[in-house]
Length: 221
Image 1 (tube, one colour):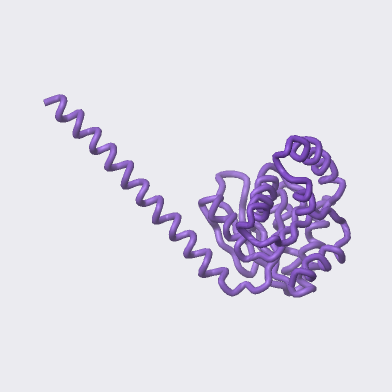
Image 2 (spheres, rainbow, N blue to C red):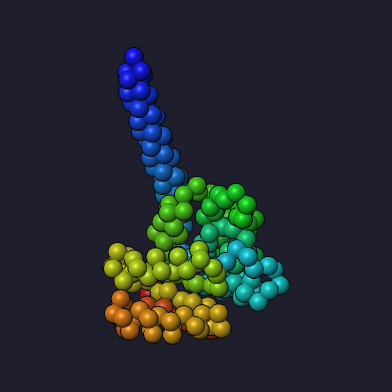
């Protein structure tokens, strides 16, 4: 009798796990469909990546706001991760001059909330779905100073370009004093050991000139 109960319990646990996975699969599909539907008509869009931790009045917040404004004034929709900090600043810059401002927020317990400077906004439970949206609808990517999340977004985007999974869109790092140590590290470690090719260094342009940012993006129109 105990053996039968034990076996039944194991079957019940297996069925329960399978049902949870099935529910999770439907949640993932629903988030994809929601994103595809809401972003389907955003037009020519540029995604700005950057930290949630910079505050208004700080150097990189103000720079990101200028970036968002410059993009909007030149006819580009501005998409960010929808949160505070650099994301808020870029959305705010676009929003303030009447540009299309898009936020793809991630639901986190403590750190992230949706900023108020968006015309279109979505919230996601899954990081990987959010990243698909940030990449799928953009023709260029701007990297503002940020932490692990920004580096993750940077290297995943570069991997997609390197492997020709997506087109060779411009990837532009703004804030040269922040990014200046990255190229030497990549060259002295990754290139030196052959884990990337030397020409892969050309996948990222570092500049503080916002007119140059627009020129680089416009050249790919």
